[in-house]
Image (cartoon, rainbow, N blue to C red; front, side, top):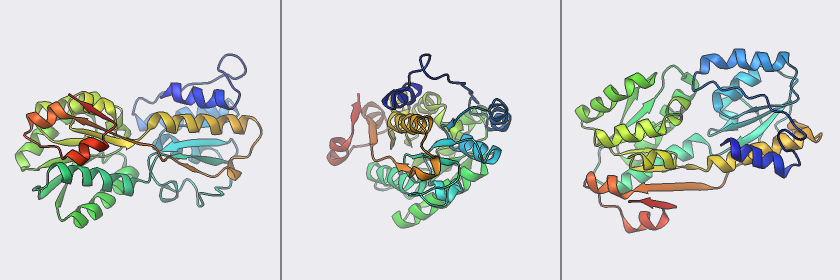
Length: 284
């Protein structure tokens, strides 16, 4: 992901260590660390803040109305309150959205339905300690489930130590498939969640190749590498003197799907030929 950001910076004429210095801050999925990290960057009077997650973007916006901010989010930035207009965001903030959450969750649920056509009950995993993302994911997933005629059960996990018990509960509830939300707690632990899904024989979908490669059934989402590249491009353009409020929020159009055929066979799932043909990669 960092490589994608640096590539975007290079496209705008900046190379780390040559004509630009980068102050890295890693919250390691701990959202409670972000306000202090952003406050430190504001005190240091950095030229621009690249906030490459939804919680980081919200923390940056809350911390400064002066330092330019370039965000990267998988959600609708208007719904999040980051901007009020996509074409002219105004103020000190702009960025990249890989996809609005509603469309992405609907698509993931649609893929699960194609793989599990007889399913009547699906589950959504959210992180209740991050209420903004949890509420968006829940609202959109319930709407999509209603459209597809399936019951949705919402399950909670606030830290990685709850994951194993969560997957055991999924099997006990008789849920056919698991839709994992886009909270950084989950997206930062693709391999762990993929391995647990395989171990507990739970058909699950999340948005990354690493999830599928670790044993998850499907990885589907916007290309994170491309989103980070676009974030780097905008960061470079601001360094070149452009105003963030005049740079329209970019919407990613590149989406990727990874199918783990070995997992599908282990679960007794017959993958439709059309879905196989659409996959960017089939893992066997």
